[in-house]
Length: 351
Image (cartoon, rainbow, N blue to C red; front, top):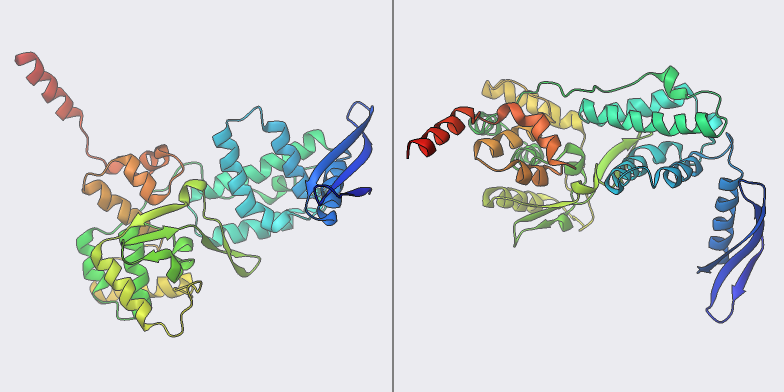
């Protein structure tokens, strides 16, 4: 792989011949690499795409997919797909040749996704994304069959009904939680509506106590049996959440209790099982029915709806990619305005 040093710019470049998809000989020149290694890697990737077949890596397939779909999909759709692929799919399959991805590999990946406790509709969306990319390989690059077909699907097309706690129910419940870690974590989930993976990734540097702002810019996921901090669920999940005074004080007091805490340490270094056990124990002691961890997020959304906040504001606070997600999930909680519309029209005509 011929690479050269640009003495004037103090950078590296690659220059090589190849055959394009029509069989014609072409020459390629690419400049501006800081290291010779980077120039060689770029040339290797370029040639791999030109000669792509079923032995290419999954990463190469993803690159080819987005090159092909770049002019066919909306930019927002591409960004959303890229985010899901980068954070949820590539960590598993990036360097694996696509013809070596087996249904059992897909099943293991699906099981890890299911463990993340995502909404069934999101599980379905991620699974469909992987299926679509591998179908692309079947159609255009000689992959014999899509391993997703034998693995089956996960998730659901329509959102399931959910339960939630009212403000009064949560106050009764939380009064029975004595463990400082559980108390701080459950209060944070209820009063901010963040996802549990986002909660587990919070560090001291994410909390601005002076301005009462919580920064959400990462999420903890279980990948291949290991806890990995990744980008949050969607681009819109990167957000700043204002927190009430009482939650600000709860978190401040909690951090003061933690010994030798560094700015980049996770402040909630425990598992979902711990949180769920705290919910079961608190529910039993308080007489409040048990709900799922994720339903604390629904509880927060329901509280904001009750307080009269707009769907757009709620979508921004929850980190939903689209306001339609908020409306589709919580539309049944919004009070009907049909009678009010008729009443207003009557008033208008009678004047």
